[in-house]
Image 1: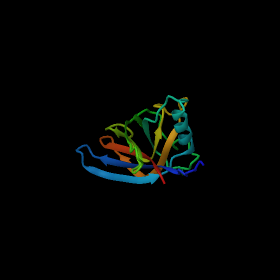
Image 2: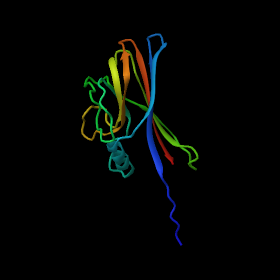
Image 3: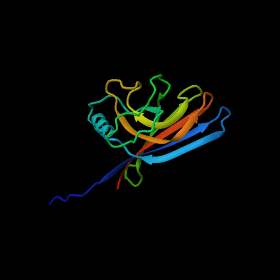
Length: 165
């Protein structure tokens, strides 16, 4: 007799952004839990199935505050200058017996002169150029304005958590 065991899993996103001045003093911190979008789930399956070579390795910042839903596929206003999307340093925490969640941590730093202005949105992407062929967004969110001046530094960390629920 074969016994069927339910194996529900949960996938969620969260982030923390830390804005510092030129001397390293913390000016603002934003932190929140959020959702993984449908296009991101589709791309995760494409990656797992070998149908995509574009891993999620870029964080983008934007200047508008659209409502992020499961159907969202892009930020509302990511300027095309190139300084608003940067590659990430990725780490993975795994636990073989599933007693703790598996976590993908993506982090980047927007240095002085990069992504300046009134930032209000962020997202995780699989390509380095906005609207490039094969672009997929994994997660995104909007938040209260972060006024990043030309000499400020913003460190942004997204975490994608997968665990049994």
